[in-house]
Image 1 (cartoon, rainbow over the protein chains, first blue to last red):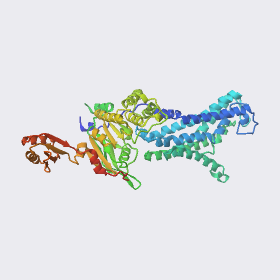
Image 2 (image 1 turned 90 degrees about the horizontal axis):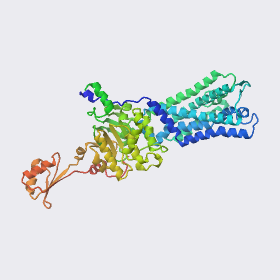
Image 3 (image 1 turned 135 degrees about the vertical axis):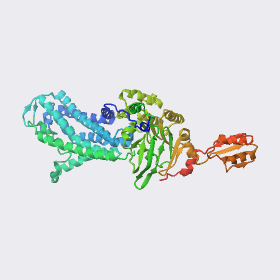
Image 4 (image 1 turned 180 degrees about the vertical axis):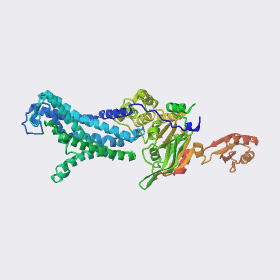
Length: 286
Length: 330
């Protein structure tokens, strides 16, 4: 054996599906946290409560949040009402908690240093965490939508859907529209989730990261409410969050929906790039 | 054996084909935090198969050094080579062969011991998912934690947490273990077990870098030591080399003091002194082996009644290098 043989680097073989296992581990861990389960429980309670309230006291059309009047006619509208109610506060809260905690929580508890020395390379970790947070975000939206659909179906029944324009479409088309609405909300919240992940790379204090992420939503909503700033309203993080109403017109303005979605994804791309740059150079001292 | 076959063997068996390359070598490793130099031009050398006791008072730069070795902190200057490869560039290839316990254990409190280990194991691309269960069970059993495997980490005692940290480092066969204060929080039995474990790992061919404040502990298991203070590596070498800085003293007990003294002087032990009251001759041993002294004394015709060699303790050396004070240096 020559000296060259002696200095051969010993490389351990990598097993197939490693990234999938890492991602599954991330999702599994987020679903085993009591805090996260409580957040999902709160989200599922909202359509349930709205449904029961409407069932007990038939509201007049025009009162309360959007689509409230239509619920008694068609339970499917509970999905739209619940999402409308959840998107300004409850869903951002959940996304803020989960994304703000993603890196900062691991750094604060010291588990980040053990993950990095396993090793999980920093890029890999960020991608897995991002997919994990995206999964939880999608799950949160799905919980609201599915509980809304089931509650609405049980209490009010389902039927043909009368759109905002007055046209009526079949229940099947209505369900597809509901799916589109949910998907749009998921994409919109993903922009925020990416912001939360970037903030999460800046600190070891998870609570601070969560609060700052939720603060982002509040600042954006505040700026959106100032008419003098109308020039920038179109590009604000939260401006198009309620754009899912577009799915309830007879002719969905696909171009607009795609434009808004592209903006959400652009936010996500910018925030995730920042998060990546920050994580690469981060000194892990906790 | 062909080169290709060797490569295949090394991939499956691990050590120690590249035994000539030190496990860890740093050159001029330096790290500042603001104006404070936490680690200053450290040239660490940990040979293959060594149990390297990494010593130093609190704040001396041990943990900062360890964090740089493992790619958690970036170095301001200097180079790191671990298991023959540059760090942190080869981090993804090197770290699967390194088990680490860094500044105490850290796990998710709401998961059980087993679930915490599984979380780390699924994160390791080089860990065989088919053997995950057995390896986790084996690691838990190796640190005596089998009975508490299903308990939530939140409910673990300090000693159990420490054991789980060690189990995490042992999930895979390792060529190098970096253990920062592994006996912290352990009871005397636990401390003994860790000592035993470190010896076992070393016997299996692993190199162990163990940082500790427990000098007596390190003295029992270390083959090499390095002493840090104020960010600098003050001493480094085999335990005997470093301890010989304060020389060993040989004491010969004999009624024939004249003959014995002459024999010692002839051996080159120039500073030999007489103690007539106790019938003893004393000298600093230096490089000369104790048995040579015994032989020389007997050959000189003296009746040898006793011969003792007293080596200075690590603690004496440590204190003389790093100071008596209780104050944190910086």
